[in-house]
Amino acid sequence: MKRVLVCIDGSQYGISCCRYAAWISRKIDVEIEVVYVTDLRQLEVPFVADLGGSLGIQPFQAVMGQLQELEGKKAEVTLGQAAKLIESEGSPVSLIKTHKTGFLVDSLRELEESADMILLGKRGENAKFATEHLGSTMERVARAATKPCFVASREFRPIESVLISYDDAPSSRKAVEFVKRSPMFSDARIHLVTVSPNEREQKHLKALKEAESSLREAGHPLTCQMLHGDTAPSVIDYVKENEIDMLVMGAYGHTRIRRLIIGSSTTEMLRGCQLPTLLFR
Image (cartoon, rainbow, N blue to C red; front, side, top):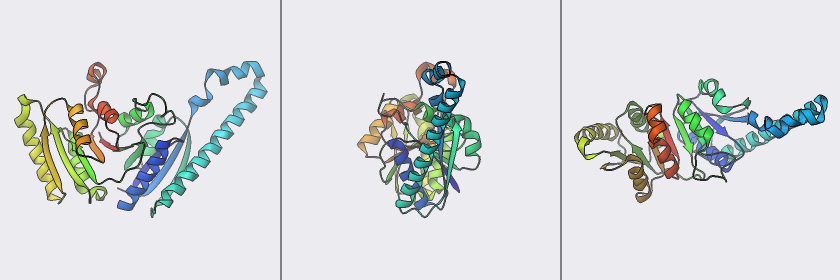
């Protein structure tokens, strides 16, 4: 892994993202690209648009210019503070600061081309409102990204124990392989968990044993367990009972129709677990 793309805004989650980026760079010699995207929607609200009619075209253009200038200054300050925070964490890191105007999801394909991992907050600048919901930008990025997504929690916590929620899907196998090989988790205690309905227990048990064998080859301290019940509630309970610091799993693996009708286990676990999550597609 050579570069981590860190997506920030002015929220508490942006601070957490920077601290996790510094943690990663202390574990792995990576380049950090910190990106701030000015959201065009802030300049397209009805009030701003109506100024064009009430002020006339020239004053309106001046107001828009001032708003854009303020957004540029906000981006500059936010990126500068992010760089200082990452450096203050003792991170021996090569750091790039990038400012774009538009929408993060629309810029994602270009930005992630040179990155090996995307790091962003679970929520954004509206985090004080509707606190049980995920940020819409985070969900859209996690669904669109082709690279692993590190979703940061509101507060930074040292990662000493990691839970892999395993279901033997291709994305889940990617997660096991990453944990097995990455220096990020070389000192962490690994919990490998699968959730199975009784009627398919043997199939799930076989897959779990294969993943367990792979992780043990890497010498990780490992706890391996099969749970029964619904996936998301079972994993959330296990996280709380075992004081897990990070969740690793495959993401959004079901069809769009199934997600529309009954929702996504990924979304449910992200909402229910107040800890960072590493998602694989």
